[in-house]
Length: 69
Image (cartoon, rainbow, N blue to C red; front, side, top):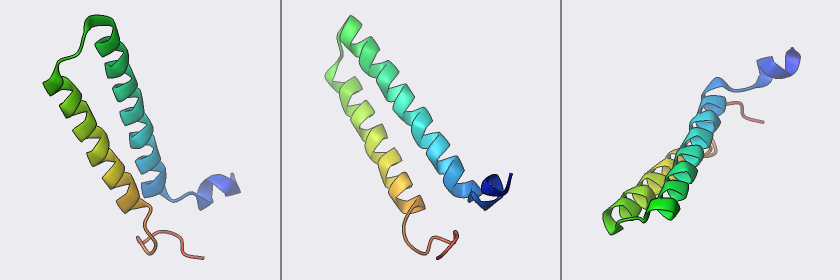
């Protein structure tokens, strides 16, 4: 139980949202492979991954208000 109390809630939430985004993109990739993708759909998926990646990098920057060693 002590280990769970040390977890930083915003970072855990960020990781959870990041994993959800990865699953969504994986599902999109599978669907695109099975049915044929359009150029606009691929661009939208790449843009969504880029935005999510920027959000995760922002959440894990040094001095983001989380636990500081």
